[in-house]
Image (cartoon, rainbow, N blue to C red; front, side):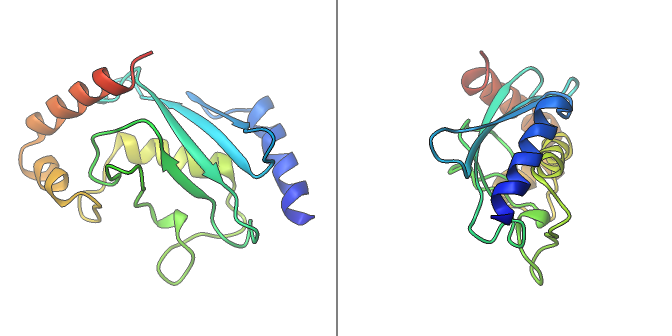
Length: 153
């Protein structure tokens, strides 16, 4: 019940006041499965790319974090080839920093920030993280190529 009421409020907030370049909606008929899209920010290798994300709300949401997975391939040190994401707010304590006060909007905004500023010190893809740290021009080139190939509308 609490999960249903909370989700209803969050979807309404995302509809009336969406974060910039982010959209999110319910995937019918499952009322705890959402879809989201993030448009890559200007000045990043992901600029104008459209990245689709699946969001599953666990039974204990908001006391457990939502499960997010990129469906659009992305060349990023914190996102693996299966779309799994390394972001502390997507993990429960003590390994992560999820709090019930966070919501889908704040999670998607944090994910957008991670896209803009990768964290190579906590990677899922060690080779891409090393490239980001030690050969940024090559990383940018590969990320732009990947965006052009998979995330352009």
